[in-house]
Image 1 (cartoon, rainbow, N blue to C red):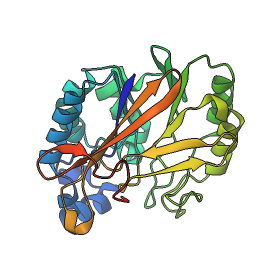
Image 2 (tube, one colour; image 1 turned 135 degrees about the vertical axis):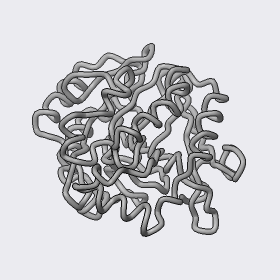
Image 3 (cartoon, rainbow, N blue to C red; image 1 turned 180 degrees about the horizontal axis):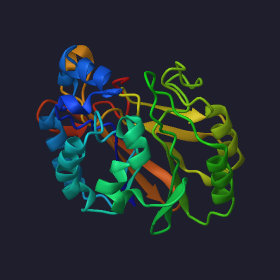
Length: 291
């Protein structure tokens, strides 16, 4: 089975003034006044859809942040853009912190209104199956006034422990938006943008490390591969932002990954980088560019 992993696409639509009397006031200023709007482009996002479709994968995993400010218009545009891709193969989608950007969007969950056929429903964690491969999805995202840290409730961690204990699958992907570890293999920080109880999540995962084939995440826009320090170690994989504008002089380019699962093991990892025209296999192999 070949699984495409996309993340942090950040579809942007300039918000209306009435939508900015909350955290979006700062976010919109960052994008449209401070100039970060140009960090993501529709041109690359459109090419992403085309080039992932060309891979003809068996499943798609998206680890969140399909939008930038979680406005209804952004979700509408993201659904139009990504719908043909997600409809092409069994898809598993989890929220990113930008998809639950405000208190209202955390409560109302518009991501699930627009993309519910791929998020699933019910309490987290959520389990999706594609053949004999399982996708266990943990939601660590929450709306915060200024910082963008995440957390998983004690109840969710209890359910995660029970789900992994009873899971019958030849291979399991564990999906969450935030990193557990940084590119050096150390606990991910700073505290303003990490998972505040990452240690508790790792403790649950370590108990079931033999059952988890790989941990997939996003959030950090420059991709990297590391490991959960468990026995056995579990690979942690982040392709980097899939909707990034092509700014090679600033070390920014979009990526996505394709993972091959063969006989219950991760037999191959491919990483594709946008070269200004299309996504091509990363020169030198996955993460050879260092970002």
